[in-house]
Length: 375
Image (cartoon, rainbow, N blue to C red; front, side):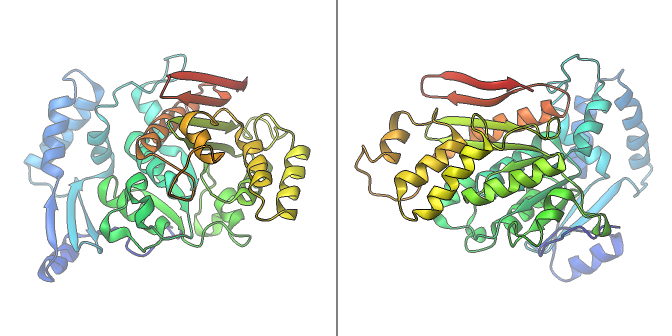
């Protein structure tokens, strides 16, 4: 049963007869299976258990057995891709990872690590910075399923930092993120797409899962929404359901990661370093004073902390510098760093690593600051 929240433009796995139909209708065939085979043959160690298993695959291919191959049709590009079956397709893409992501004790085998990362379900709320994070998670950890939500459309101003192409502009961010992931990284992955964003009608499905449509509950939720009220509601629901929440913030040339281990402790405050009572007071004051940026920023930085208010970012936010552009300033290079760092953190949390509740990295100095307990 695969009734999870699908999306327009998703890759479709097809049999060989359907492949012929698509080719007769003008589709282009791209064969990456041969490259995967030779790559595996080159990188697998001769005395490894994986090489023993691979030799069976290699022999079946030499005997012209078609079973090790899969075909996917991509409607957006009218392309058919031929690849190896899922296990070997993903293994070919993971050989460079080797054992760089290990459990703290170093006792798990490569296969055991893969099982933990395959079973990981990450939900991502917000597909600007979240889109870059989603692609990095899939590229590095290769989970079997992810969930993404964003009601907004991609536009030119955020194309450099989010990695939107010409064909993505004006289209829904969540859908285009899913299409890019399946096209560029993994046609096998199940992606649940919430193109209406997270609403009161679907927040339970997004955070709690829904067995009736095979919608999985996430292990970790990456919170990258712009709406401060939504940030609070998402965290409340995650705490209620015991789901770990991670927020990544790019602040000029600095990156901050906030971690709420609600999976370990459902009594943690919603944000690092501030009680729920005080946070709600600041939220109420912001609602009572719409348009007052001082009060809004006091609410925002109550959730975020103030480590990021430094150098150029501080000058722009606090109007010390004369700038010609509105909105929150962001650098594509900082977002790339954010995505890489948080993916490493997620991969290691899944294997039992502990991290501080808040970690701040200033790339300009450089400087690393930690806050809170190590959980």
